[in-house]
Amino acid sequence: MPEAVPAFGDRLAAVFAGQGQLCVGIDPHPYLLGDWRLPDSAAGLREFGLRVVDAVAGSAGIVKPQVAFFERHGSAGYAALEAVLSAARQAGLLVIADVKRGDVGTSVEAYAQAWLTPGGPLEADAMTAVAYQGLGSLAAPMRLAQENGKGLFVLAATSNPEGAEVQTATVSTGPGRGSGLAASIVEGVTGWNTEHAAGEHGSIGLVLGATVDFADFGIDLSPLGGAVSTPVLAPGFGHQGARYSDLNALYGPAAPATIVSASRSILGAGPDGVSAAVREQALEVLACRG
Image 1: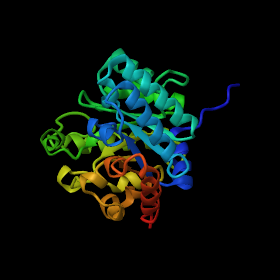
Image 2 (image 1 turned 90 degrees about the vertical axis):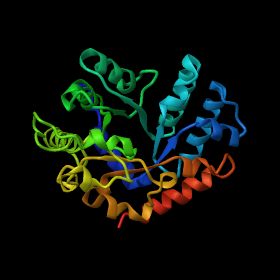
Image 3 (image 1 turned 30 degrees about the vertical axis):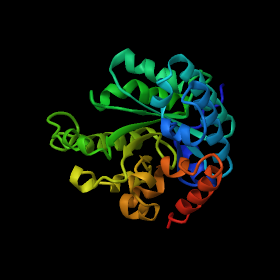
């Protein structure tokens, strides 16, 4: 019989235990490329991404490439991204592709196949997804993630202020009826992990911004830290204003399963300082475990 594929949640728990909870974003903003003395081209993005991978390896365990910056350069940008994804996984890093894909039926399944298929050119360990069409629209990606030992992070409550109007809108049908959209997504993902996961962490996670007041969104964080915890991808630390020292206060029972994501506060150190910045901030996050 074929050997069972380790669940993403189990691999995430191992990374937390060994390298901590810091996730370094690979976000090649044009201004950062300039600061790093690199061209705003596919070749510049490739060099930038590979340098970040080298800086992270050995100091932290997770990277999150922002695919949009690579897409700007078309097929050449995707070739650069493929090189960065491959190098990161070969370095033993857990890779979250920040793609924010969402659709229905075979279309959303194809998105998941692109990013979550073992051996594929864009293979990552997890991807971000959007459930605007309802959490049920992500059934195929969730199933594929489960089968392939991959992860999925569903946007629930994001830090951008214009998102609150939609994310707090009342759901009129389904399991989360009567609650806000974000709260219903949290409830649905937590329930899915409780039903399907066997380890410490589930493999389907949530994107919950660190600058969000979760009470305003009607989100109860306590179920996320249950017998099977739901992973949280938490953007908003560093440049966006949230402090690592507030991790436990912000996420409470969900803090032990929270991926602390930072990019510009680390990448802004430049090519000569990025390795030190990763080490320092990884240790800072580690000290906040409590």
